[in-house]
Image 1 (cartoon, helix red, strand yellow):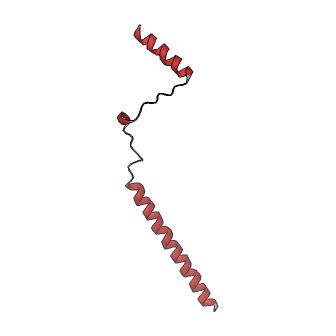
Image 2: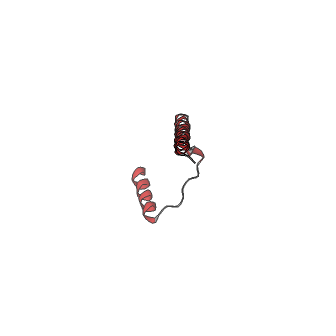
Image 3: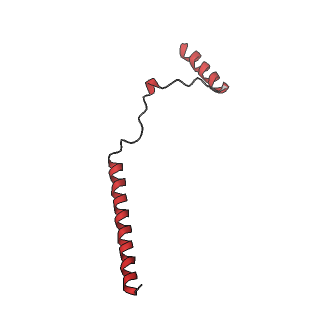
Length: 69
């Protein structure tokens, strides 16, 4: 293979690589623009966490007692 052909192929690969990077960047930016900011959780339908540690149970009980008075 001649030197000029190697140079041409090298530049062609660089051009293809840059086009691919540009397309990927544009796709990423478009996806970021249309993003809603992640998942939205409907907390009213989420199950209640009923696994409290003993310290949390004591704290919760003392909060209920002080709130009732």
